[in-house]
Amino acid sequence: MSYNTKLADRVREALAHLPDVEEKEMFRGVCLMVNGKMCVCVSGQELLCRIGEEAMQAAIDENGVRQMIMAKNRPAKDFVFASEEAFQRQADFDKWIILALDFNPKAKASKKK
Image (cartoon, rainbow, N blue to C red; front, side):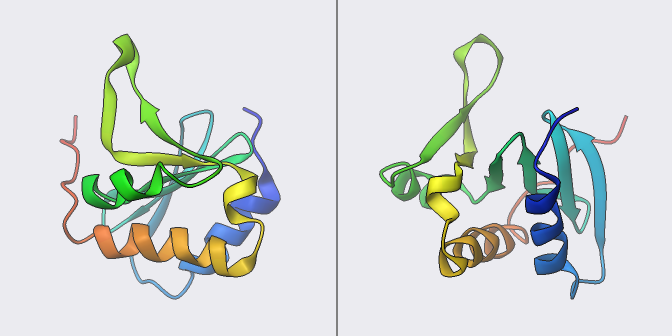
């Protein structure tokens, strides 16, 4: 599994103040779960952020941002991939973390198997 470990460390640091953060390997990288729900993942060189459908619609107009597409070309309504272009500045990186954390209380946890 090849992903940007420095980017993963940045995400870990950004979420370090939270009491309930867990890491899981998924999406060709590492996903940081907050309160048992997917929040921010590092997949390859990109951030995969769960920001909600409304924020996703606004975000996909930005450079370096695209909606996540699942199997069978099915769009994932709450998720976006942000390339390095979309978080070069610290303020931009912080924006993605904030968007994901703001949506987290509204997100549904996946069913446990």
